[in-house]
Length: 143
Ligand code: THU
Image 1 (spheres, protein in one colour):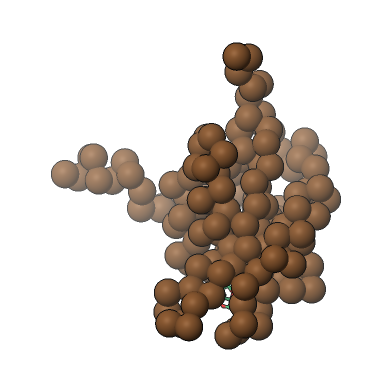
Image 2: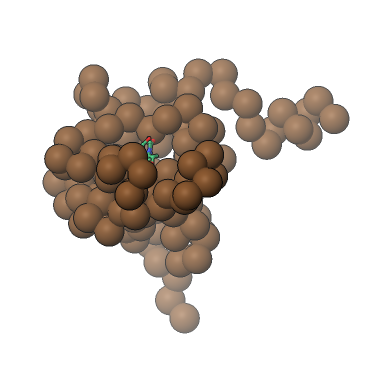
């Protein structure tokens, strides 16, 4: 079997964010958000070039609802793993939405640290929105 090429964009100009936002918007339309009525969709490029997406899935037990990023990370592992290299997230109007704090942590463990993301204040790197992140290395180094 031929292994996929590595896809490691150096900056945002190498990323088709229009396509990524379209995938996020399509995912957002599948959201199950009857409680908040706040649909969210997320999409990402993986380091082999494939696109993954996810929507939020709420629950009658409000506190256990899943953000779109949770479904996205599930899709990452279910479709072959790898690391996220570019990410976008949209609200119910298709406008860019920031990942919540918990989901920034979730993205951290499943992305390259300099993963490129669309934010409400322009293109940023994941380490810009989660500085000095706690991660798997801390567990090993401080054990
Ligand atoms: N939500 C996400 O899916 N991702 C985020 O990063 C922010 C919040 C969802 C969770 C909940 O279903 C709804 O938005 C309202 O908070």
